[in-house]
Length: 496
Image 1 (cartoon, helix red, strand yellow):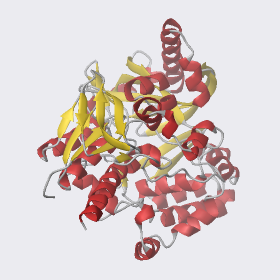
Image 2 (cartoon, one colour):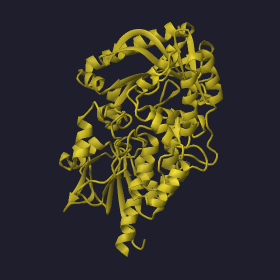
Image 3 (cartoon, one colour):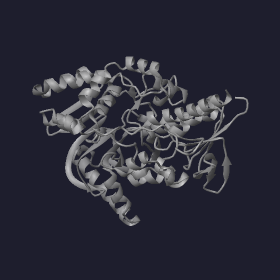
Image 4 (tube, helix red, strand yellow):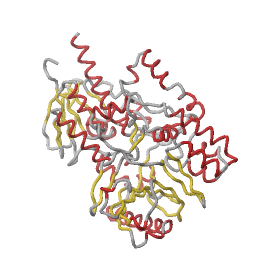
């Protein structure tokens, strides 16, 4: 590029950092403007009482060497040659009555335990395991956007995922609740509606479990913040400039073209291109204006039945290792309680025993997750500041009691660290309705996907997990890559 063009990126989450890194690799000047003191967005962690709380990574899709997504993670510095992964042997465990059911990383072990538990479900169990093996082939496109693929690209993708149509045919038209209904044993019925919202299309669940079981969904040690910091380091080593505590208040549009940004302190910064990596509703409402929101965006945001969103109330605790010897994520029944106006009778707890640096010697961090949806977000949002704090305190009290009831040895050996809600995600990340992922993919509803450009505005691109359901880190990082890919292709075309 004879004369360096400048790209400004609004938002320093994983999508924004990914866009910044690929912009520098393509020869552009790149500045990221991030509203918070540190970059990372929802891929974040923080410290309380000498412990580290991890907000994001339950598993990272794309960890298997040789895959296209692994190459992206390596390019952006998220995974390095010597990055180590947690030694986790299970996806999660569900407790139902006296039954403990685990989805192991070892599929043969899972199948054997399921069959021992419920011989009458043999047909469905074997079908499930077989299709999880098929689903291990599934990869999200990471080389270039799907709309830019040619026939050859689709042929290669089809060949590499030859068995995925079997998964889609068997599980792509039912949700997890219907999938659970195929099983006779009550513990298996519960298992399949624990980890993801029961409204999720069942094939998504198989793909997630398959990633973990096949070694393509590992947990990088150090967690979310460490991964973010590796990406920040990579961006800055490439000469990118990161501005923190620098929220963008407006994307400047003149003559139907994005020409720069205005920061919250009224500073104008001009650029050849702008990439919006903030929450997309924040972009439409505050940075460019709702008049640019086309019908597709409007309909999806409006129809919360077809395109629901989810968040959570979460709480973290420091516990003595001597009082808690469980590992991984465990779901269990509890006495009913209300939080966010929603009745809850089942919660999950995750142990971070595989991260010894997250807590002092002899201690472990436990985190509890209570799912919340649009309706619960609105409940929290309507509370006064005093009511909100009181509701949080009550949630903490009830969660503690439910943990003691399930794990009696914890009493007297557990200390509260922190609690956060959908409102926390909204406040910290401008997350619409506190959602930490994009629209849920429901059965019979076309999964949401857009190109990442704004109709009627040139030189403005979207790099966000929101451009493709169900969102998450892989969608975010590839969205950043693809935004720069589109810009570079446009510039190459202009030179010819």
